[in-house]
Image: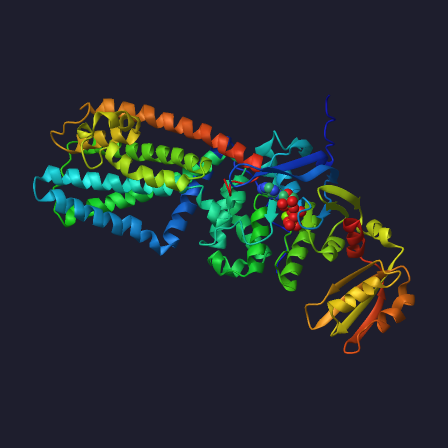
Amino acid sequence: MSTPRPDPNHAVEVRGLTREYTTRSFFGGVTKVTKALDGIDFTVTKGELFGLIGPNGAGKTTTIKILTTLLTQTAGEAYILGLDVRKDLYEIRRRIGIVFGGERGLYNRVSALDNLHYFSDLYGVDPTVARSRIPELLKAVGLADRADERVEKYSRGMKQRLHIAKALIHDPELLFLDEPTIGLDPGGARDIRNMIRDMKKQGKTILLTTHYMFEAEELCQRVAVISKGKIVALDTPAELKKGVRDIAVIELRTYGATADYVDRLKQLPNVVRVVAELDSEVQTIRVQTPLGADLLSQVVSALPPDAKIIDRTIKEPTLEDAYLRLVEE
Amino acid sequence: MGSLDDLTPGKRTEGLLGHKGQVIKACVVLTAKLFFADPQWIIPSIIAPFIFTLVAFFLFGGQAASGSFLLYLVLGSGLMGMWGTTIYGSSNSIGFDRWNGTMEATLAAPIPLSWIALGRVLFNTFEGVINALFILAIGLVWFQVGFSLVSPGLFLLASVSTFLSLSAFGLLMCTVILLSRKGGFITNSMEIPVYIATGTMFPVSILPLAALPFAFLLAPTWGIEAIRLSALPGYVGLVTNYWTDMAILAVETVAYLALAFVLFKRVEAYAKRNGTLEEY
Ligand SMILES: Nc1ncnc2c1ncn2[C@@H]1O[C@H](COP(=O)(O)OP(=O)(O)OP(=O)(O)O)[C@@H](O)[C@H]1O
Ligand SMILES: [Mg+2]
């Protein structure tokens, strides 16, 4: 059986991609097979900003590792810029950039400048080009005046900006960003999102994974929702939201609400789902319901006497609501 | 915050050898920077060899104060120091990325891992040279060892060749570490037998017969012989022919390199199968 040639307009082409992990117990006895990816298909066209979203353990990082040639698939095919991830290792690596979220991936005991020089040589960037490109990149990510400092003194946000500069050092056509804003404060995350927009404007293709739905909604042209190793939906954020057209969201900000109250809300008829953040002093509770405002009186009367509603709004469902429906069903 | 517009377009170094050379250089430079960034470097490189040398002098120095015997000791301690750093440092050239959290970044590079390791190993072996030079300086200044070499040119050639053979050995050990769970155990337990087998402190000829094949398979054994022949007047070694020693050294070094490159392919294949080298 011959497989069809990859489409030259596709930056990423994935067919039936499957990956199993075999883990042995410490004493070598029991083996456990985890199917991290279970035959996924998708394509990313050149110049597109494509999002991969899904809960913990869904298989996002596994997908990225296969596409960046760091891991081999158990079955299926993956082509990057028309090249086979199993065969054209080094050609692919030269043409892609990778950002993994989190603290890892930099040499902390040396400066940002040292890191960028090292990685530019590793990627075979012409040294004369590197001499102008490195300061330009440092300036672009706002690290120019601290370029000589050891990376260990950097804040999380600065490190992540350096990661972006590092991933761009060899001017890749295609970027893989695995949770690039994880662990950043809102300002730091916004800086990264602005850089992602800039990269897109320059015509780079981007594959992004994230846990933050508003981020996917704000940035991505198309989003694949992945759950337990399978793609359960793939569309534009607007189209995905149509999946929850039948519901509206009552958003409450409350004072003194407890898990008890949330449970009571869940028991109400016509409540599809309740998502609550109870940790802070002011709680945010989102009640999904097809009744919309008509449910409001019941929501209010379920409130215990010692709790207060600060404000309440009826909202259009967001990508998050659509996402929750997809991954929970 | 600036913007990412108007960056100089990234142009690639032409030619594959150009890129390999660039990677080796970059890895030497980075490893050197990381080494000197940690003030602890002074312990293995300066203080430990200093103590080694002192002990050697006090043990053997008194009984034969002849200049050439002292030079023998200096060479021996210097080489011993080089062995130590080769085995500890070089073999961890890539293993270092495990605890530094840079394994993926290293594995993602568009060049075989062996070239990255080679650059790092070269510097790690060079740390041993720093160490050896320091011992030599102690010998020259403190113990006033006469430094008259039989043939300075051949001595230099033998020293550089031994350095390269140590690097090749380090590269090989680096794959052993990556391919074995008990990597640390292997290198630690190898250090002492290797000191003895290569005859850094004693002539190999006094080794028991059973240990000789092992000693002969270690390229630096021959390098050390060649160094002594070119440095010490009247030295009687294993084959007592400088060029024979050098030829065996060359053949064995090339064999190490070839084996290391083959094993690096296996390391990379393992990494791809499992997506990491973190928890081998
Ligand atoms: N090296 C490994 N060995 C065994 N199992 C693994 C390995 N890496 C991942 N897995 C398993 O594969 C599944 C998918 O993991 P993956 O890291 O791809 O998820 P993810 O979508 O990136 O999750 P997260 O949002 O937490 O980053 C999980 O069940 C995980 O436990
Ligand atoms: Mg992940």
